Length: 222
Image: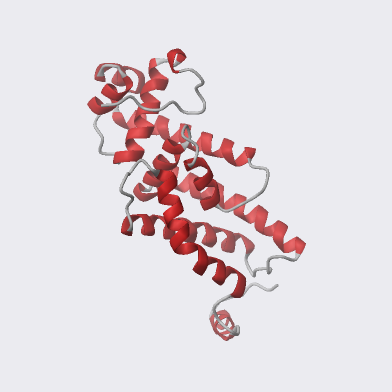
């Protein structure tokens, strides 16, 4: 099995601790092959013994929790470094195009599929970020205001990632490790209809919304 690539947080593989090598190997293998990858395969990729993994992390679950924390931390760093606000898909495409961060994208997508604490934290983080840049658009007059800005931001986040994951399931890339290619394929299939819906809308009047609000107790007001 080939050795795994080095992540952006570690500048020189020769200086990596055994713990960091195991973490990096696990992130890449989990992202590429799913969370059923065994400890022995991770140890082989990291160049350590399976016993050393148990020594550092206690169990495979302990290793998974460490990977969760690391990936979420790194993705948050990428978000903080971004000069302009943008969609989650734009961030993932940018990250997937950078060799050292591509394993983070794979791991994040696998985690969203599997659910759990990382998936919830990931979505919460992006929904909060979306709420901020949408509010900026509302203030600038480029985005219509919503009856519930927080709910709209969360819906857009969940809808965006849900569409991405379903599309990748229906159109799996030939190379599972080519996350940049997978993201570009998704955008080529979904770019036009999603942009059209965002800019032109779908319905020609708000009668459906008005009917819905009749059945909502204490409906929100603009």
